[in-house]
Amino acid sequence: MSDAGVRVALIQVECNDTESVDDRIDRVLSETDRVIGEADFVVLPELWNSGAFDLASARHHAQPLDGDLVSRMAGIARRHSTWLHGGSFTERADDGRFFNTSVLFGPDGSLEAVYRKIHVFGYGGEADLMSAGPELVVVNTPLGATGLATCYDLRFPEQFRELTRQGASAFLITSGWPSARIHAWDVLVRARAIEDQAWVIACNQVGLQRGVHLGGHSAVIDPTGDVVSRASTEETILLASVAPDAVEQWRSEFPALGDIVPF
Image (cartoon, rainbow, N blue to C red; front, side):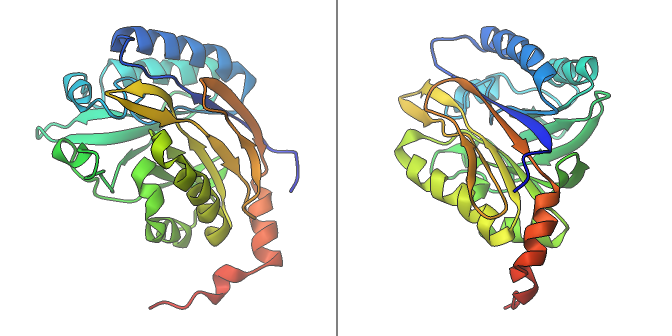
């Protein structure tokens, strides 16, 4: 795979119960403002403002899509003329429902894509608060045609296969995946890359929330399934280079997608 390409920075945020949501937002956005100048594309984790496993906080700090958090992130993208995947937050919709909503900003600060998590996590109680999103999202970015997904979605390969069928050659995954199942995360991020011959850029968080340890291991996986870069279990910035043309090259050399048999 070529080393030339898009510089990505994954901000693996530490989200602990001991830090207030307002303080974390200020801290993380300040760090994002610093890091974004070193990259072409920056990615944040799932529900990083409230904590992925603190559903009471997620409800309390829910915002509309035109709220302050989205506005501040758009301003950072615009100020640095850089793509920013703002992770996800709890969206309070006009009809009163809540969604686990991820947002992607273009270099002019425009909201290029909104993805509402389709597979809400029943086992962890997320489904008691969040409604399932209505549709898949593929958007053109410097990474190529890019499919968006969130955490638990990773366990459902049919979602990624459909994103591929819709043209995706890269997947952006924002997550709050726990340490207890981090071995599954490590396997699944590679599996999604291997079976769909696509880049996987997956940003997780760390920290302790309501007794749950978050597992880190944010990763960038190339279309053959090789790990280009993987983070530790501590708060860190993971840097990597993504070569979008590597997808077409590998799919041409090993055209497995052309042999799909629909059932």
